[in-house]
Length: 257
Image 1 (tube, rainbow, N blue to C red):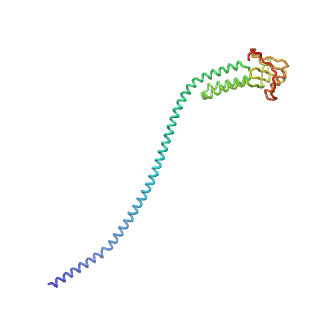
Image 2 (cartoon, rainbow, N blue to C red):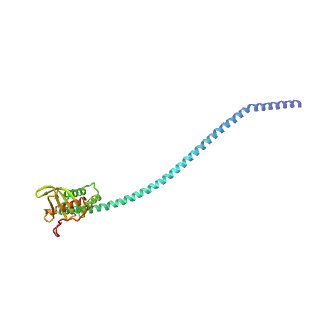
């Protein structure tokens, strides 16, 4: 009986060992396959991790770029705000200046009208030299005052310029050629203006000479003795000869300009 039991145990142990060997032999490929699958999964995971890391770096770069752009925009907006404030201040000053200019315009327009009226009266009472030129200048100034497309400053400048030209007439001598009616006859003559104290004429052939009588408001003939002095004075006025002492008749004091 004991020998039978020992034999049975040996048989059972052998079967168990054989079964374990068979089981180990059948699971080794599965383990290898599982390991390879795990390695592949790890590689894929690492790739995903690397991709996520690269994406994170890209996002960080974009974030920094956006921050820099925001800082630049903030600085630009602050600069624009300063400029806008300066423009608002300037507009306020301009509004104030326009308001003051409107007041000045209302005051200066009557002044210019009075000045042109006085200038017109002065020319009418003055020696009758360059009558057409002076009348045209006065008309030009009047027309400029009436025009709405001319600034007040330009209008006033033209009025002052007309006054300046008239002022210069009193400090210069001038000779020019023109037509004049002498004793009912239309003649081409040389005119000589000596400041505002004397206005003379001489026919182109030199046979007739005369001066303007401001009191009588007419031309008065001069004797033949003034023919050469008047001719020489005309040459001096035209700068054809050197300046020299002029011997010309002048109105007596109190006789008018």
